Image 1 (cartoon, rainbow, N blue to C red):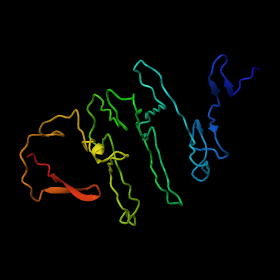
Image 2 (image 1 turned 30 degrees about the horizontal axis):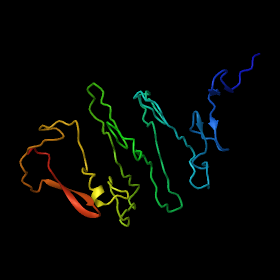
Image 3 (image 1 turned 45 degrees about the vertical axis):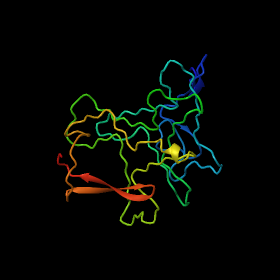
Image 4 (image 1 turned 135 degrees about the vertical axis):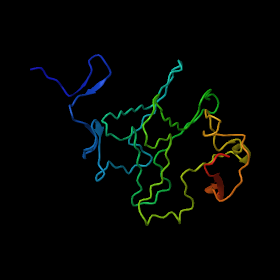
Length: 237
């Protein structure tokens, strides 16, 4: 009988193969019961560390390709094909438990540039969310959006009254530059590729509306000072 190991290095290659059937690569003594391929820890018994400034996963990569092709540190793709499926390709969940943290974020994504050479001749964006609208008529129902910002209120006793500032969106212009340098970040919002016509997202060249009861005030903060955006009702001006 020939021996067929479950863990081996491909002969003549650099690939390390782990072949277990339904087994997983486990880190730590507590198995991750929801993992199919790799994992460790559970909600009740997570993998822990008391070492400062450490990451549980850390991949620092660099591409020297000059062909113009895309390269990525990590690529994930998840297909839902079960009919009643729902889910995400990536779910990030940060929990504050038993301590008051200095800062906490569900995710932090950055785009940086070299001090001299290192610029984008095309698009440069920190986060790009693309809603792919297939070339078909979609059925009625559903709520589609490229970005959803949600403040989840857990119960009737939930209150942010004592919090200094809270909002669905927060925009800041930071860094050590002075006020003159920061003023060069000119626009709060940019809309490109939209149609300019009645009944569409943008309809320019209209007369100033006659404000009455049919309008709404939307609260915003500018440098900590409350202001209100005024929104007219849906009637075309």
